[in-house]
Length: 118
Image (cartoon, rainbow, N blue to C red; front, side, top):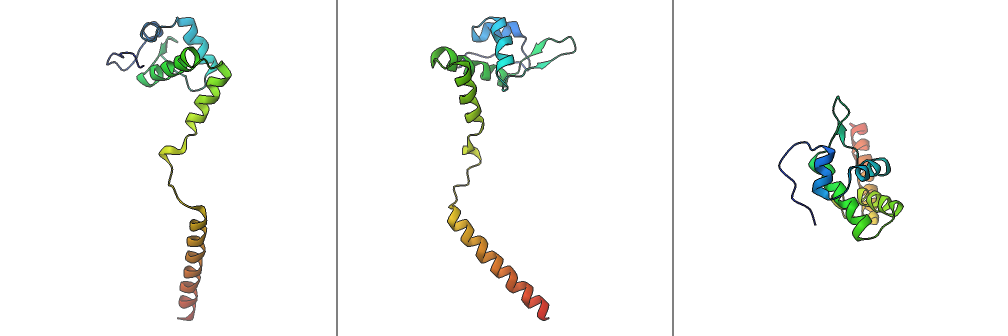
């Protein structure tokens, strides 16, 4: 369950730790372990988390604490989610596509022949 995230652009690590319910050192460890968790840093080197970063922290916490994944298992799960083609799925039949491509190629060759004859 997603905790209440205040309406701000940036959050410091202490605020994120409080919102999510983990210690700051846990967040720093997760940053080292999970490529998907890379908060920006300001000129002083302080971490600046955005809402999307907090949502990722919540997801990592769910995987590790509630679904009982290992670190490696959680990494794999997040990587597979990243590759999920659902947003880019065109739902086409590869055989139909090849058939259409062959027909298109034939039609284009016919047009080329017609142009060469003129």
